[in-house]
Length: 77
Image (cartoon, rainbow, N blue to C red; front, side, top):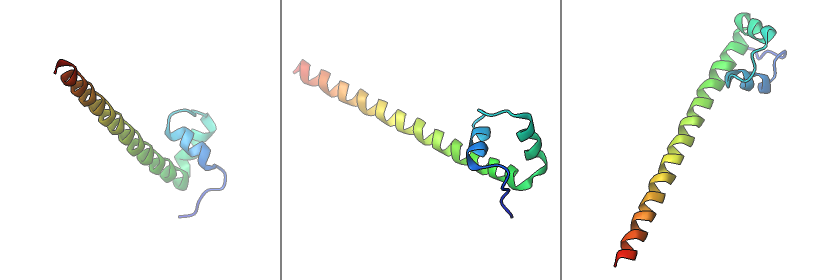
């Protein structure tokens, strides 16, 4: 599939994140299969990144709780 030269990656990513709702861009994505596919790929990548960040935050919170529990046990001794 040819890559469209009218829309750059930054525009694709901004649109995929919901931060760009330009009418021309939306219309372009409706008829340009290359750009529409790039938006889908970007959305998949962004969703994976967001899930990874959420998982990392949960791990950090769990570790912080474990450290707090250990500190409390040592204080009680």
